[in-house]
Amino acid sequence: MMTRRIIYLDNAATTFPKPEGVIRAVEECMRYRGGNPGRSSHSVSVAAAQTVYSARAAIASMCGAEPERVAFTLNATYALNLAIKGLVRPYSHVVISNIEHNSVLRPVSSLSSMKTDYSLFDVVGKAQGDTEGVLASLKSALRGNTGAVVVCHRSNTLPVEAPLEAIGELCRKKGLTFIVDASQSFGCVETDIEKCGISALCAPFHKGLYGPQGGGFAAFGKSVSDREIRTIMQGGSGSASSEVSMPGYLPERLEAGTVPTPAIAGALAGAEFVKRQGASRIDRYERELVEYMKKRLSRFDKVKVYFPERSCGGILLFNAEGFSGEELAAALDKRGICVRSGLHCSPLSHRVNNTLSCGAVRASVSAFNSYSDVDAFADSLSAVLSLR
Image (cartoon, rainbow, N blue to C red; front, side, top):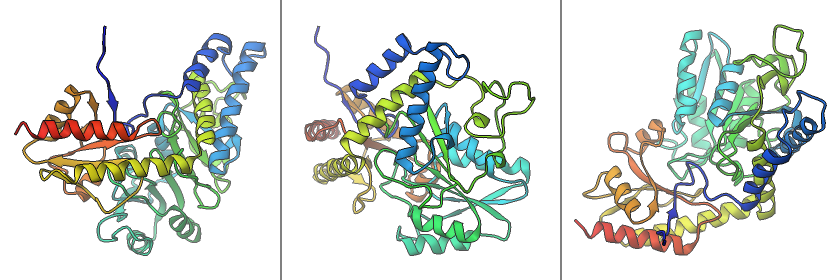
């Protein structure tokens, strides 16, 4: 039985397919290293613990952190909640960028219960994306009680990137906590959390690390003391079990319950894949694919590509005259092209883009896509457009 060819262009949601090494690592972990890490002293548990530590070390090496300061979570959203709710103080003020995902916007908004409010600064818009403009917008948003800045490194809808090093330097001078959502950049952009003055950097396994779903991490900078981080989950940690509170040291302080060892094993293999390929090389290749995609789509009068002059990451956002985003995505799916329509859980960036009321279609590439994939996508889009 023949199956249709699938062109997967929804990698900003989750990369697919996964490297064979990732698939093997997950299977081998479940077959041979399936013990509970840090809970027992027998060989199977020790083997699992060794895998977990190796993954901590691999991820730490990718962002300039210490392995013990990498706390594993269920995903990037959990990691961001952990960092935001663990580091932001009551009765303070938080500044976030105008391209944030709901994984930042919603937990920051929920801090109103602690009498903490927030405001926005421009990464795109009036600031026009230049570093000086971004910093000017950020400075104007600061207040006397501002305690933290939370920034999306790369948008999941627009080809824009926040200047982390410059923002981090400002936060360092002002004594502000600096939390970074690296969901769309980790594995593509080499980021040193100490050089950038980052207090916490959060990312998932299943995107730029090419790992499984169901895992993520928060890496904390040296400026953050272990006990400074309030816990949002409490439970078994495998250590200090006689105490009624979580341990006062990382990573056990933040890892209540059993960590997702098979997903962590997959993330370790994913990190090794990225290291072999080279993060900058992957990033460059994705940019080249998107530039080629822009050229193909520029031939269609009915298609509007947003921010066509920018080149950042593997994302392209567009709409087509006469089609809603949902209709267009569904029609492409019938032709084997997987893209995503809607607001992409990022209403702030769509507000900046003037697409909040209608949404848009996003095509996003990975290291596993090819120029022929882009051609197939463009040809299918042409066929869909010809229907109206």
